[in-house]
Amino acid sequence: MRYWELRRAVVEAFRFMEERGLNWGHSGNVSVRLPGGLYLISPSGLRKSRMGPEDLVVIDGEGRVVEGSRPPSSEYRLHLAVYRARGDVNAVIHAHPLYASVLAALRKPILPIVEEVTVYLGGPVEVAAYAPPGSGELAENAVRALGDRCAVLLANHGALTCGSDLEEALDALVYLERAAFVYFHASLLGGAQPVPPEALELERRMYLARRRLL
Ligand SMILES: [Zn+2]
Image: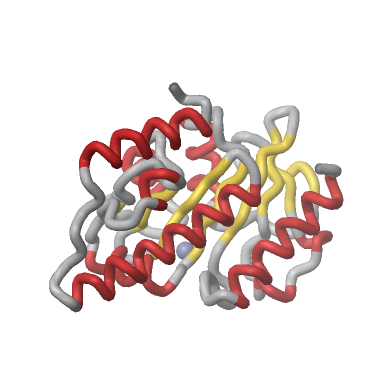
């Protein structure tokens, strides 16, 4: 994808999230890995659904702005930590989806009660230990809880998803919120039955093969 198309795709991602109730207002941040150790990231402080492609910022691996006039997202440490830990990841989304945030507030992992949790997210969605927003500690906790999977909950805060491109990270966010929605409602009706272990094993292999981690 060409550079300006990529900028437009990031802007579109915010509109997509807001239309579907996956993120609101000034919250949330999206980044994409660029060649040469650089990262395109959303800026801090703007209403994201009204942002234009020119508002995005390019930072280096230390979070220094190398292109753009706005400050980068205050969660840039979170994004950079995921890129450092995961060579297979080229896009990261941090958002505040409603049902995922309920489980993040409960500090309750999402167990694989629907097939998508393992096939697309890699397994149970763990909860990263609490740390203040924007902190290096939050970044460390999130990377540890994420492991080799594509989604993690941030305690009392929201969620993070990632993928080999922006579309995959966005898909992961949709699968995460659907799983959280199903898990929440199934819990109200007595609790969901888990996917059988032999199916989980097969689904986990499918996930790893697609991410070329096998
Ligand atoms: Zn947040």
